[in-house]
Image (cartoon, rainbow, N blue to C red; front, top):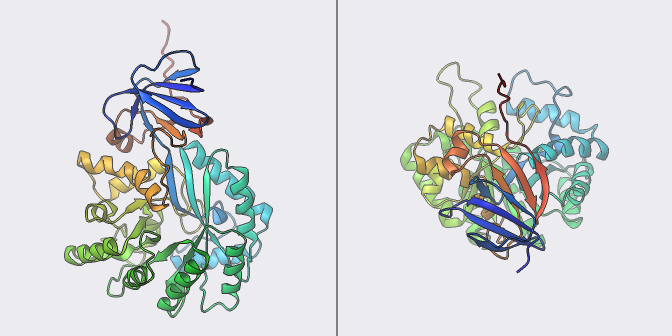
Length: 410
């Protein structure tokens, strides 16, 4: 067998020992010890090799808006209002430039699959969607990008919004999303989103239950409709900060409902920390739902970035390894198994959420690889191990050389 590239001495995630990885025609064709020489090769010296990070919830279209928007109160209402004003001045060129800057950061941090939410409504129209549709095409060499269109300012209460949503779906949107808390009839919006998903045959991704009062949960209605429509395994809910405010017994009951319905959960630590608990003077709640506890109860839970450099979250470099370290700190994750599991929540669990069956370092799969500067999953999380280089379908997409000391010679 001939290879286009051999990676030597790789510690492959979730496999024992080290092995060589043979790549041909953009796919994994051999994984074993001591592959024969005769092809270009690179020794990764026992470092951890993963199939790449998977971002499931980000907003490329409204990233990098600091300087255009006020961020004085730090509330959800302020963020929505400020971005709504800025959005009226968006052009395709502007959206493309800001989104490309953010996307390139993600690529250089080892992300090679991504789902981005995109706002569409009667004001911005399809401006952002069409810009990101072009971005998806232009960066396909490095990252697979899904576009999830959603109505940030309401659907039922925003006349004409459904027409814009439908036009985006007809023009090739990959996923339909919602923000039910923006309509007076949240269940009505949920029903409409399921209707659109069935009509166009797409997955669903909601912004949901983003508050700290768990007495009313829209997730119950989402689970009911997932069961009724047979859409289990194709529905995700993001934020769900209300779960962070529940007693253990209620949390476990909600987790069972989610697991039974096949509804996945995306936790967004940076935004959830920044926006929630703003009315508390002391003992400020974190507002970050325990994704690792959900996973232990059978829910496919993952961690993602959400907003970057805008009023929803004035921080961020699109590093998922940094995000899971933040999550582990906030949720006081300490056991070796749970720390290692944090890496799963930006890799294998996220790929499952996107319903990708070709993810993983296995013969026949696309040769997507990121090499981390560590040897174990736990080290990756605890030390914020940096990605050193990545391949997409066997072709190098980025390089970040490991830091080195320049010791004095005398």
